[in-house]
Length: 357
View 1 (spheres, rainbow, N blue to C red):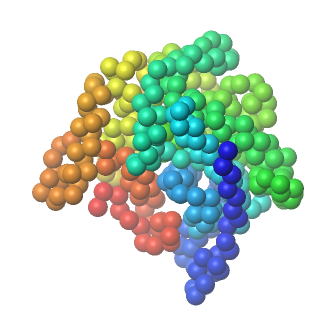
View 2: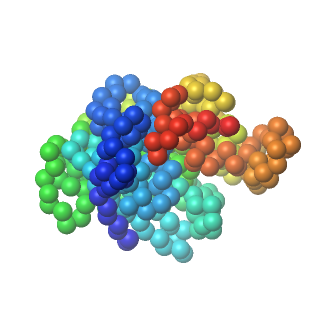
View 3: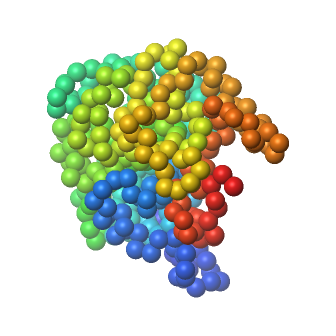
C-alpha cells in the first residue's frame, strides 16, 4: 500500500506577489458552506468542484491539495491511498480530501491513465463477479464488472479508516491525532472514467450495506462521476434505481461523444447505468437525459474506432466529421471546462476556457 499525505499551501504561498484574495481567487469564496448547503442534487458548484478533483486525481497528493485550495478549500488535508498488484489487474488510487474545518470530505478516485496498460486491462476485465448487496427490497447477488469491483475493494479499508477519523472530528492524515473544529457533515465521492466506476461502487456500498450506512448514511451527500462506464447487470441498475438515495444522488456526466459511458459493449454481455444522467451537447447547462440514459455500444470495434477522434481533432478540416464515438471527448479537461459555470474562472483563477472552443 502506498500512502502520500499533504496539507494545502496557504493562499499567499500560491500567489506570493498578488493579493491573498481577489476576484476569482480562490475560485469560490466560502466553498465549504457551498458544499454543505445543497439540498438538491445535481448542484452546479458541486459538479464543477468534483470534476476538478476527479481530473487532478491523475496527479499526486500535493497537486490535488494545491488545486483544491485554489478552488476554495484552503488549508485542506489530503491523503492518497494506492495499491498496485499487476497479476490481479489492480491499479487503485483514492484521494481523501478534508476541509480545514473538517465539515466536508471528498473521496476522489483516479481513472484510467492513457499510458497505463494495466489500467486498460482492468477496464477490459469484463467477466462479472457475483456480489451480494443487501438492498432493502432485494437482498441478492448481482453481476458486477470484476475489474472495477476488485479495484475499489483494494483501497476501501484504508479509505473507510480515514472517513471514520473524519466522522469522529479528527484529521484524515495517518498518525495525526489533531482534533479538527468540526466532525464531517458532508461526504462526496467522485471520479472520472475508471475512477467514476469505483466512486459509484463505493457509493452503493456506503448506501446499502448496513454497517457502512449506520456510520455514513447521515453525511453521504452525493456521488458525481464523469465519463463513467457501466458497472453491472440491468438487474443491479434496477435495484440501484429503486433505492431512494442512489436514484437521486448518483449523477453521471457525459460529454459529447465520449464512448466510455457506452461500454462495456453489447457483445460483452448485458450492462446498464443507474442514477441521474446529464449530457453536454455544446451549451451550459447540461441536458437532463436520465429518461433515456446512455446505452451499450454495439461492438467492441466501435470503441477502437473512437480513437480516430484524436486524429480528427488534430486537423481543422476534419473536425466537422460526424463521429458517433470520439475518445478525445473522454479527456477530463473537457468535462472540467464544460462544467465551469458561465463567468466563473478556471481552477487557476484565469478567465474561463469555453468548452469545445
